[in-house]
Length: 419
Image 1: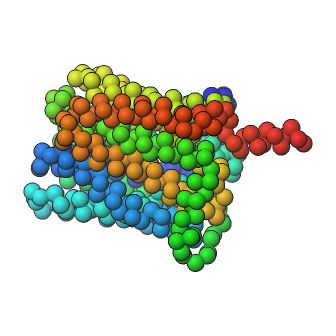
Image 2: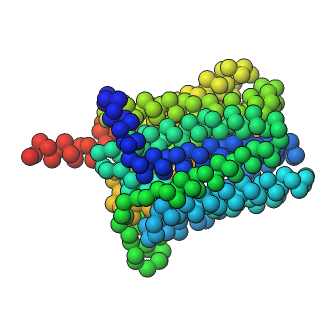
């Protein structure tokens, strides 16, 4: 990492629209994280099924996978701020529907999965627009700090959300859902007050050629392809967080409050890491930093699976979050710096597919393998597979493992020397 002055990391917050956007995203993420604890615990209490925990992830990922390419095209042809606003409003609707489900006293969980399908649909449109809009909110010189601060606010919400969700669950799942609804309403209001700079719209006709433009761009950039595919396959096998309700209950003998702390630990590691990156951004040995982060994630997963001690599990999850943050930070900068604004939504959509697959599909894979091999064996297997993928990708993409600086930094340096 290279050091910057403290003001270099925080001065970007003087940008009013960035501050409003980050606040809206923070409250929305906080609400969703609170809900995720309540949904997971509520479903497991009703069914006591590891497979159903995996279905929670699949219900969100399936519509996401079906809609994401279209969502990327929409992000390039329509105002990204408006898209985010509508998606936040849909998340608010989902929260209110969870309130209605709990009040109904139903003992079947398919309505929850239906609500999560709606949430996954909204998230499909929100992710590429959210990734692309950040470049429209800040000047180029502030972008790396904005990325780090965006990540830090996101992960602070990931820290606080599960803890609040676990604590508030003592008053029942409906109390969690009602508080989440209030927070989501505030996020909608803040997003409505946010304004972004003009974006480069692509008004071409919709076709398979235009929908697949982002995929063709990623395929033509080995560095970008290697970075995002590494995250896909590594985290796909390491999606042990989906099993935390069962892990807390069956392995650690813990309750919903402890589950909230376990869910918080990866976010704590990621948040502290992202804050450090805001002040000391990575500028050298970029490839090794990224592979090291993914390797740390896999190692933490193995340690988590091998322990029955609550403090050790917390530390392992904390390190998993820190390692994942390094990978996310580098991948996001690579994608956004290298992509023209007129196709940024579609390229972000491809990146979102990889992120979504590594998260939700990884959760489904973890639930499935846990139902086959047992809870602990599934976690250890996932972490070991992540380590194998890390080593394999270093061989498959040597240009990435040897990369010292971000490509745009190298181009700027060459231009400076030529001038």
